Length: 55
Image (cartoon, rainbow, N blue to C red):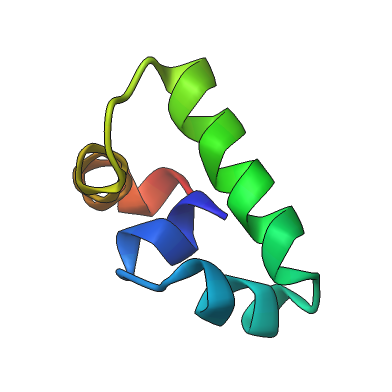
């Protein structure tokens, strides 16, 4: 999921790639942001890029 955010995918694109409902992808993205203490998808994308080799 974080890798998908790092690639700049929308919730819809993530849901298509991971074969889940759009609402489910949105929920997962929101929970990831919350758990990592991030305020935006941009911050998550930066984090994903910084740790790309670990994902």
